Length: 118
Image (cartoon, rainbow, N blue to C red; front, side, top):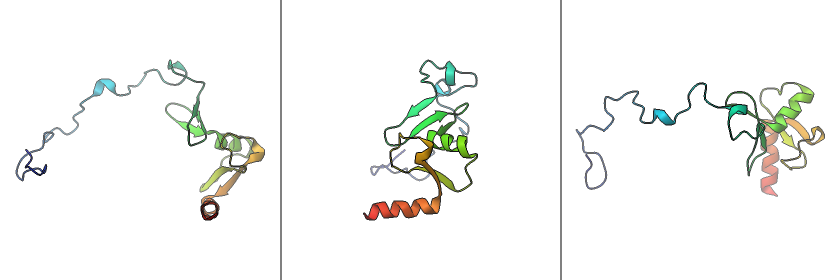
């Protein structure tokens, strides 16, 4: 029960008291063995394009990987911990290996600060 200010009145119980683990919509949740990946009717070849980010590739059950990182790792091996892959020409769709560079997060921070101050 709430008072006229929309606050709970002290001493009243909430609607979900004693319902630990209550699941209001199990019919709409993902279930093991459902159509995922190539089996899904909306499958687009494992490529996902966002408006403000780069392209993502499907990398297993409910996992995805940024395409620039996948291209860089294909040529140079695993990306070291604390490093990111950037596009040298700032074109997020240009994933040519000559346009990709691995830099530390510290270098990325400095680069972004320079761009912000320009």
